Length: 353
Ligand SMILES: Cc1ncc(COP(=O)(O)O)c(C=O)c1O
Image (tube, rainbow, N blue to C red; front, side, top):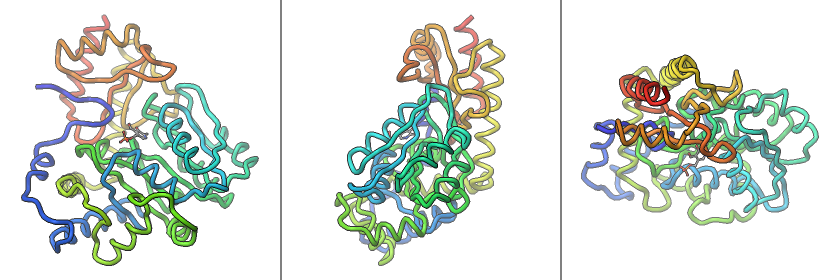
């Protein structure tokens, strides 16, 4: 048995895998309307957003869709980064608008104290940030920063790809206009679906602006089709929609999204405790530790990772960017098993000795 503890894709339980094996239906059928109607409505309730959509594509598509629907070429997006995925948000932004960006080194997190002056001094119309920087296992203090940015009159975009539903989120409360996530992380599904949540202001922006520079990602088209009969503008990955519905059922059966987030928080506390007891140093500074993955410094990180795989078929991943070869990451996302985490941690302890 191999154990997958990478920060996406993650272990997918058999029930979800089998949900994809149902007979095919067309996306222009009453059966699909029922399926997407159920998923979309539940998603909107889970996020507490005004509207919610599922796109066939990965997390990057969700982020790019949000940016290209929100930003116009003559305006500016302020973007805070603290790693690979923050940088990717900047990269996407630069395709569609002007970007003002500020970065923190590996392991540092964004909080309001660090963000306030930059927000005060910016003339950007849009603000974007990653909730959970997967590259270094750093959870930014998203709620306070997004609330402040919105208070300044900005439209706000969050990359929640490795955060939701592992970490607390309420779109109204967070004051986020455009939310993006993906199926292969804490939802515990296979890869292939991008998740979008929109606020009232987001909907107004989409409908009132000029040309949207995409056909596939034009959210006006997604809105129109949903409002007509809860379908998608193009042919979606129907089997993955079935998997997503099953994943929602499993999450609800375990007490719903808040209980799911709590499960992740507890797992992160457990893994951090075990890792630090081994004498390893965490990468995130205190107060910014991710709930969905644990990142730590390790000597010979690549060698350790390789041994985990060859000796016990356990997949964990290394760090990228400035910590390439210097750190490791263990994910506890979605439908992870406690016994898998224990075997991983026991093996790690033995290998690093
Ligand atoms: C925070 C974050 N944003 C964006 C992405 C990109 O998502 P995808 O690979 O699904 O396109 C990832 C992937 O790991 C991520 O962790």
